[in-house]
Image (cartoon, rainbow, N blue to C red; front, side, top):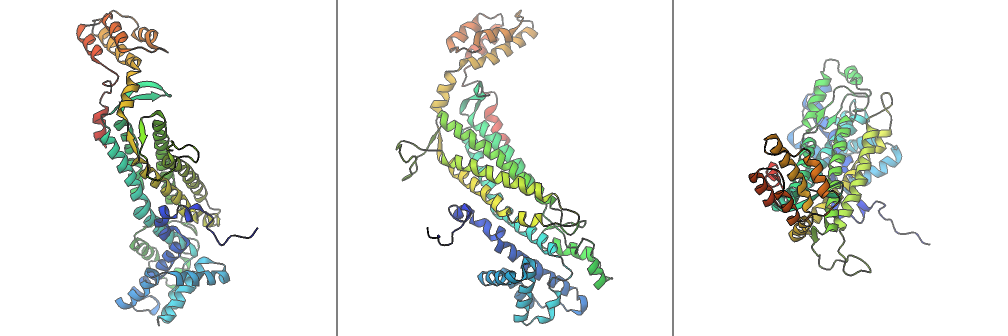
Amino acid sequence: MTSLPPQPLSPLDGRYRAAVSGLADYLSEAGLNRARVEVEVEWIIVLTDRSLFGSTPLTDADKDTLRALYRDFGQAEIDWLAEKEAVTRHDVKAIEYLVRDRLSSLGLDHLAELTHFACTSEDINSASYALTVRRAVEEVWLPKLRAVIAAIGELAQQHRDAAMLSRTHGQPATPSTMGKELAVFAWRLERVAAQIDGGEYFAKFSGATGTWSAHLAAAPDVDWPELSRTFIEGLGIDFNILTTQIESHDWQVELYDRARHAGGILHNLATDIWTYIAMGFFAQIPVAGATGSSTMPHKINPIRFENAEANFEISGGLFQTLSQTLVTSRMQRDLTDSTTQRNIGVAFGHSLLALDNLQRGLTEISLRRDVLLADLDANWEVLAEAIQTVVRAEIVAGRSQITDPYALLKELTRGRRVGGPELAEFVQGLDIGDEAKERLIALTPASYIGVADSLVDEL
């Protein structure tokens, strides 16, 4: 059997690339390397701005020329780095050599020794990961999450008054509305999204073991911790002053746990919508030209929700692995984090794919209110809760001598179908006040929804 031409191994780079390509600008190898060049270049600018070691501040034109090294980062740089890393066997060292090479070609050779000055690889990497992950989350992943939350919220408003039979433990239970049930998911997700939106993205910039030893050896009079803080915060990320050789990754653990949490909530939504479709509560809107089954022409499969379910499981597993691995490091440094962090984009990719499918799936369903009402009308026994609660209130008020209203309703309804007329006859015979009887007789499963409608306004 002949070998295939080079193919993407991951479906994220093949079948699903269109849905996740926005992440590649940041969380791919090239995206990481562009950020590394950015950090190296900006460090040179900071050092020269302060005229350290006899350097002089660069002109605005020279700064723009330098910044073009990462702003115009493209295939030529990707290829150059691949060739250099094949020799160095060290990705960050290859970045240093790239910057040095470009300085020479730009006539800025005198800045060469300021490239990667007093830095360990993790100074560059921690800042680069903070930059790329922050940008990927804030510009690609979080907007998609918020779009899904908005879609859920819109459906909640649209169906706020659509009475439906609840099912606790899968059994008929006190009615709610479809809008309120969807609003629960939107409310949960908004809370997690706000936590993610307020998260920190830390970097360290303190040398080989976090002590600024080499910095002080070169320039004892410089306040290197403060200079490093100014530099890192100037990049738009947060500064961690107390580290080993690596930034401790706790911010990443927090982020990935929250992303996994959001995915878990959305997985719950996907399985609930799938179940509502199976029950006939939602009808699926046919997509022109689509095939549901290779052998059963009638079928419309809930593939968007099934795809979302599976990809939330994959991303959740990866996020959990990232959290578990990145929280520890042997002594001052080991390399378990290096290969682990290369999968950040994969984790967010599967999550983004799931979000995309869920967002599209929510536009391809239509609520069948007639089915909801028929389901309610077949389960009048759920009013037993209302009846026994009203009876309790009547007993407290001294208008009833009934001794055990719960047992009375349990005997009537448990495991039995009870219709409206039968319940009305039962209520008429109860030892309670006339006003209470009137309220109970007027009650139907469809009207027994409490404040479900108005709860949607909490969104």
